[in-house]
Image 1 (cartoon, one colour):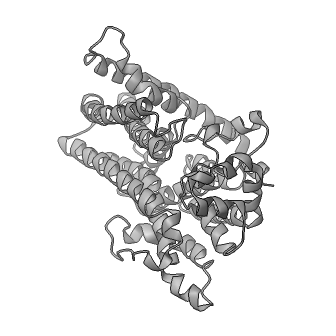
Image 2: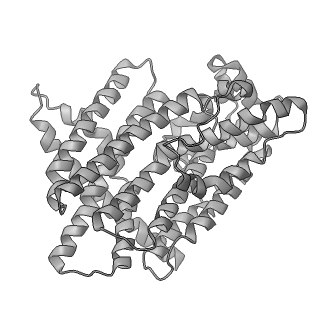
Image 3: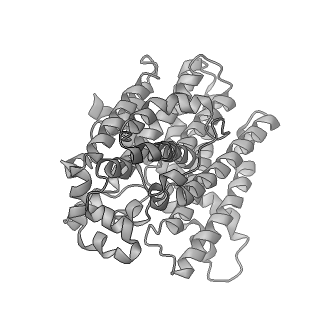
Length: 423
């Protein structure tokens, strides 16, 4: 049954991808009026990556679709055929595409900030294209919102609510990018006594979000040593760093899925008792994805064909060890550095030596992967993602037909293509 659901889910995701490409064509028509030269290159310049990304099993679009399916069943309001077709047009396609545009804007920025997707900061034309394309996409997003989404809504109040949700999402993602660059960094890790405290009542990490994630944050914090005098001096800074990591991943990723859930709930007018459980599910589901993406960054194979198999939605095969390369201290590196304080390894040598020692990553990829496996970091990440997966599942009503799809989506924590590399 699980394999059958997975096949059905992948078929639905491919269908969503086809719909997203059709919506890119709508943006292309909107953009064509702004062409200046006869070569007609503006649309490809702006929309090329959006077409590529949204057409390939678009996760956020699909999550929007399935969240609507779940809530629609929970509400038990069949409606006539025209009503249902209109709602599916809204939640399966139009609203789903809005969230795909937002994630692509983030990816275009990420390619520059983290030098991913074959973008390097010295490649000025490519950097310029990503910046300009993302700015144009941001404006097209709101034009699309009013042209394509608004006619499917029930009132002006709904378009105002949707506009606020999308604007806030764009804002918090950028705040998260700033945290990633300025705080979630090795230079901050090595000076724990200088790491600032987090605001206890910070607006961007509300009590409900903390409640959903706190058991898992606490498990990571338990790894922080606090025995020697130096460890005790460093303890508060290490804890703040770990909490800051979860704050950053919430802003740059988890907030997407939470916002999708809250938006669907708001637009359909759902007031059932499952609201909080669905929000919790969304928060924990993305946490699974985040942990897997973090340890996937260290999956390496000397076989080129196998490396192609290991690519993820946001990274190409050329983005090997991208987080390490950028000194981003993600969850595997937190575990690794806590385990091996003072140990001489290739990973620590690179982090301490800076990018002038890039050859360590280029020349010893197998050893880098083996080091992070041997430290127990990958095993701990896998174990934590599995615990989050089990927690996310119990948020769902087993009687709802969409639950089996959501559970299948959580199953990636139990088994995925990276496990075979790390064994």
